[in-house]
Length: 103
Image (cartoon, rainbow, N blue to C red):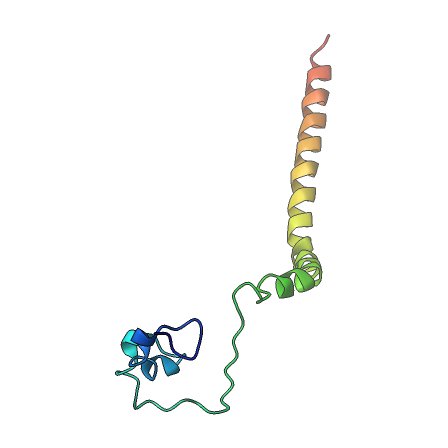
């Protein structure tokens, strides 16, 4: 009643040749029967979880941030000095004007 293998019943003996190809789904065996296997071809790819997308940015971030800061420090520093200087001079001028009209 059963074939020589313990796990496979005799009723599947006709479909055994079709099931011999493991790289194709059983319902697509007829479609892929003329397609040759790639003997020895190795294809490699990196999973999105293995790719390091952010790490190159994090490695170069301090150097790039320093260069950008030093390149634009003249403009930011000049604007800050002008703003703070104008504010302190206007406060001093306002205080001086308030003291002149006391008596």
